[in-house]
Image (cartoon, rainbow, N blue to C red; front, side, top):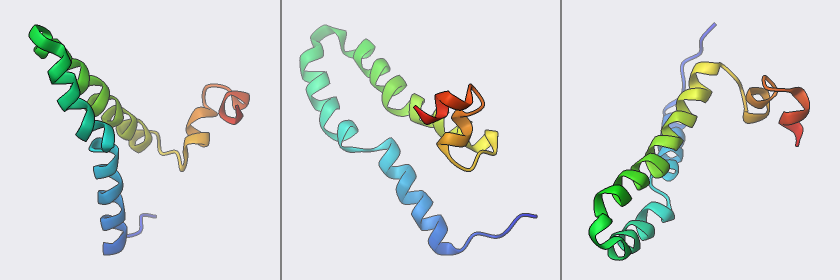
Length: 85
């Protein structure tokens, strides 16, 4: 049975996703990255998008589609001892 989330839960999830995709690393690092990249600006931007947006997005999708309640439950599908270590 599915339950309807309260409005405060939506706010909490929204803040969590905002922090996941736009943390301090994505605020400070791009300026330094662009400054140090020089002529290699586009490969640097693509790398930042893959690691700073793509990987957290894939992690969010994995948790959503797996139906797991937490990260330990998701990791226990690999091997139960893997989830503990």
